[in-house]
Length: 388
Ligand SMILES: C/C(=C\C(=O)O)CCOP(=O)(O)O
Image (cartoon, rainbow, N blue to C red; front, side, top):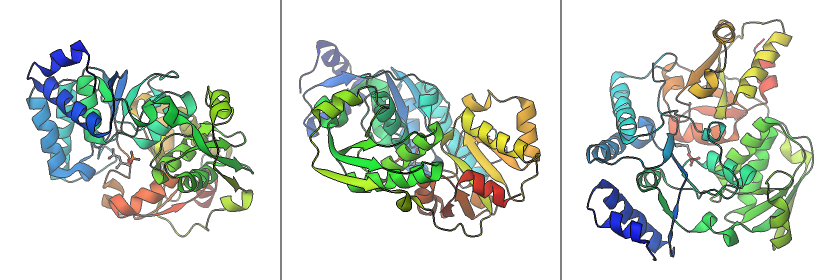
């Protein structure tokens, strides 16, 4: 691999950044990369004690104690509880281990927003290079903005944040971003239907980049589709006609080997069974999504919901909501939680809530696998309708 003089100099220092760079170079060599790229930002995933356990806590605290510090702006994924504990009960051991993780990340220089939708905070213009580790976010910046990130493992995003470098491989190379399959979607795209589309496109295209022709959809449906797609496919990039800023270029250069048509009949949800709570916010809800729920309840005369609705989001989004809206939502059994999400936290189970309805296809996939919850898909307007 070709290394610049500056990279050689960092390698010769023998400090924490030097050791991190050594690993980045070794990984790059094993991937056949011919050089390293400078990244503008990093987004670290795998920071919940629920998923990384004691080994992860030790890894992060050893790195922080060794003097490793982030070189580029770095955000982090949701952790296993709210920072102030409010609505997300966890036991004392969990809390203390999770706080160790937070301490290590902050010591290394993380911007501690604890969100899986950092694209709501960071502008990632077309062609810019990033080292992100959360698949929905990677899929979003690649597909909607034509920024560049591969799907990097959580620990590797930390090394990228420390060094400011990634190997040039996979989706960092223009030739690997060329669509190889075409998908045409017919029908009205609701948020839950968008999750089904993402799953179908992901399963059909596998590691190939799809070129997707689909009608207009809301931002929350777009996020749901891309999150689901990146859950079911190893490749976090689709070219969406009319959406990706360079879709015309991709269309002119693509070489399509297979096609799929998705029709309205494919987008029907199974009947929702009995549930204990409703969840939205995977990916973390944006302001529009929270306000959509507030408006639904306003239109129905502000009824108190028969079962709780949890909305997970970032502190950034929550800070834009007035205390009056938040306390009104709380009175109506709608709980806006930050820093975490139910797929990386035991809090729903700890509150005795085991059967969860959600418009998020990604949550339906992960809830049974990561936190032993039963999850079922629903359209948010309909789930809320059931709770009036
Ligand atoms: C376990 C997850 C995130 C985390 O540990 O931070 C959710 C799945 O992550 P993907 O990036 O969608 O694989």
